Image (tube, rainbow, N blue to C red; front, side, top):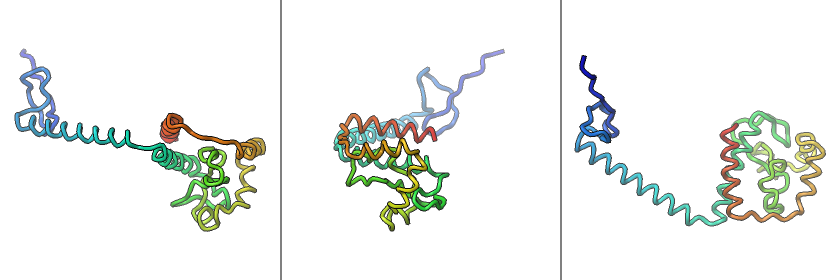
Length: 177
């Protein structure tokens, strides 16, 4: 009873082979050259991505956070009706702010201020604010609603580390949904 030879799967061509050395990951010189070129290309791509990340401004990170936050709101509210008109949210819908981002940037990422809203109400009826105001206390409760009203005049200036942390927080929350 002899020992069965150990085989591995080549990382380039995916064929099985018998390695000559313990650390061998490719089956031939040709595959080694192709694999080395691929690794080099991937390394260059990674370095380019890291360089681009270092060049991002606070505004760039804020825009990315807004996209991630809006995605979270859409996923959180996918089975709820539109906050303004009570129609089911189907197809494309927005993350509509009760207090606008332009007038109240401090509430931009406040989850009680942003709810799933149909495109018609958010974009064509300019958030359908009257209906939004009537339905929001029912959705979050009077206490939270009063807290949101009190919060609107408080200043908020997020630092870059806080923005980066929020990006990670909402990425984790998205994975949890």
